[in-house]
Length: 193
Image (cartoon, rainbow, N blue to C red; front, side):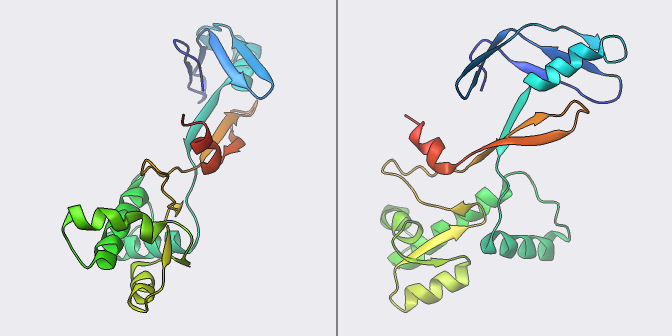
């Protein structure tokens, strides 16, 4: 994360530009000062672009995975006939499943009632379940559940927030995107304030 007012931008395609704006980039064990490198064409000053590619980082939501995500992909493909999903649609999917499970557990569609069951169906302790149908079967059997969704565990904190991990990626000297670090949901939550 760049400290304001700094930002970094790169367009590492073909003969395009590399731009880095002045600012501090916090790194493990200190910070790196990214000086303004300016607008350069790679064939004119390749060392400047190489320097920029070593400083630039991007942060994105970590890729989902696991049994619930596979179930989500299968359902998505059945409806939309593609596995090229819309960005963050799996988050919306999990929101709907959690809400439906909370309604099922509360035996009510009144949000003032079922809101109190959100953490009961999504937080531990409980039997891990990954689909609406399997979770409902457990609820009907009187089992406490812990829904782990398409985005992974959905454990809410005391403020009813849930956190996901983030992938920190950078560029190789050949301008290929590569993952440099992973920030876990626990690390995000610990630094949330």
